[in-house]
Amino acid sequence: MQFDWHYALQLLWDKDFWRACVVVVKLSVSAWLLGVLLGFPVALARQSHHAALKRVAAVYIWFFRSLPLLVLLVFIYNLPQVFPATSAVLSDPFTAGLIAMVLSETAYFAEIHRGGILSVPRGQLEAGRALGIRFTGIQRMIVMPQAIRIALPALANEFITIVKLTSLVSVISLAEILLVGQRLYTQNFLVFETMLAVAFYYVLIVTVFSRLLAYLERHLDVSRRTPAQAGPASVALPQSAPAVAPRPRANAEFALRIKGVQQRYGRHEVLKDIHLDVAPGQVVSIIGPSGSGKTSLIRTINGLAPVNAGEIDLYGAPFIRAAGSHPPRVPHDRILDIGMVFQSFNLFPHRTALQNVMMAPCYHRQADTDAIRLQALALLSKVGMLEHANKYPHQLSGGQQQRVAIARALATRPSIMLFDEPTSALDPELVGEVLKVVETLAKEGMTMIIVTHEMNFAFKVSDRIVFMENGRILYDVPPERIRGSADARVKDFLRHVHFA
Image 1 (cartoon, one colour):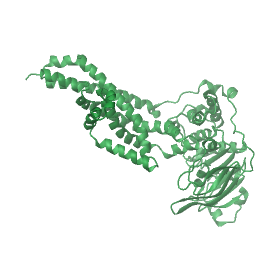
Image 2 (image 1 turned 180 degrees about the vertical axis):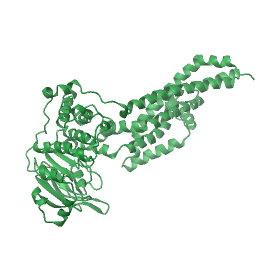
Image 3 (image 1 turned 180 degrees about the horizontal axis):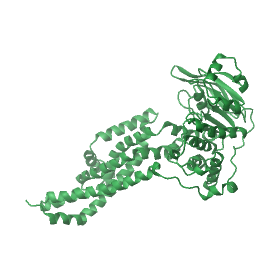
Image 4 (image 1 turned 90 degrees about the horizontal axis):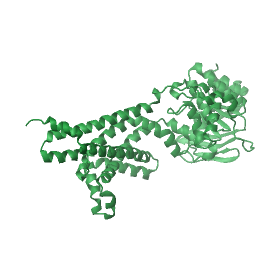
């Protein structure tokens, strides 16, 4: 039997094949997009702390990954025989095929998304919570963009799988590429030539969309982007930018009161009966050896860490109450009173410095976008980062990233600032530029609680020094009393810390 080249080449212009290609593209793209969108909430449910929700998601993923697509297609297409009311929808092979593929692929996409979600650093979620962003906002603005970028190669690979799986939909009489080919070779018996054309069309579709998805992957890769120059608004900043100051607060004796706070993990007590009062405008530095509970204490203040006993008041009003082993529910409108700067910066890597600073005010709709942009530029100018406004975090040094983080924390106009060892992750030559910004805030009267090992800085800017050891506050005194303390524990600690 000779190969019929003339017939095979004719099939490349066959209208039925090209119409079938359109059907395959529509079905593949629709199934892929719906699977990507629906897979994300299933992945979140799979990661949920609610046992029932987690179990339902796990069962869904297990069932539809176990069920062959061919069986699912036949079942859904024949469902109107059991439920006649569904015939209006499921009698159409395209719709029935799409529903079957989405049900099946959502389970696979959920696991792909789960891998992406687990790859997003936990600090990103904590940064969002510290800015008062709710769960859905954190997922939409912080987690999802990063998770999709991480998972995009796997998502693209799944699209190719979907294109090939559309051939199975021919069993319910959808006129896709394989069915068109089968109809032809049953008439002329030129099986090899016809299937060669079928293969060509599938390869063509996969090649085109592989290129498109590769372009999308490059576009989402911020490491490939070059920083843009400062825009006109930053040039006009000195004349047009509004002043950025904390919102006025009701008069209260204490900005912050911590009363009897305890924290434990299992049998290990991290914080033991902590009492601390901070008046408006005071700067309190928390020092002590590693493992003494400094960071744990500062993280309880804005609800990032659980409080097993005790309470925290903000400007005389209840703020945080004990919530067992889970992080407490924090009033989102009042969390804006507290800004936090993290040890590891926790800038959002998919956003520029300017976008990082603008995110929380835009989310909380504190003003119109233009006013928020000018305010963000003013804050970047305040921390000496205006010329780097359009750079991404990976394009900045550690000291520059921390200064942007300070500007981001100030963007919601908090009245209290928390600093969790803001210089410990920096090279020694970069420490000074961050401490200078913090010192400026202290001079402006910002209420601050600072966890630090920079002793000269702490003694210089602090009204009080809190010394902690083994989860307890041993001293809460003016700086000069700590420096001159005769306590062997304090003297031993001061010998080993940084006084430069």
